[in-house]
Length: 59
Image 1 (cartoon, rainbow, N blue to C red):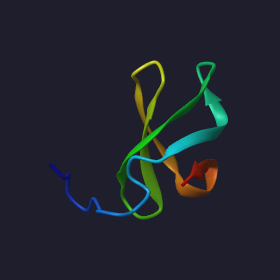
Image 2 (tube, rainbow, N blue to C red):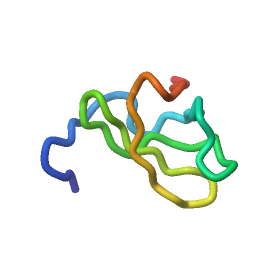
Image 3 (cartoon, rainbow, N blue to C red):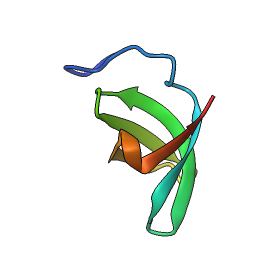
């Protein structure tokens, strides 16, 4: 299921690290791609929207 404007890209499912911690959490997985913004599901289960250049994506 995709939200409006969500793109199906190769980075979905990749592990990542936020450059700026969200409430002490930095590690997660990319679960959505909206071009300049991506959705990251953190290890605590919270999903956050971050700009692509504020996230290190591991492939």
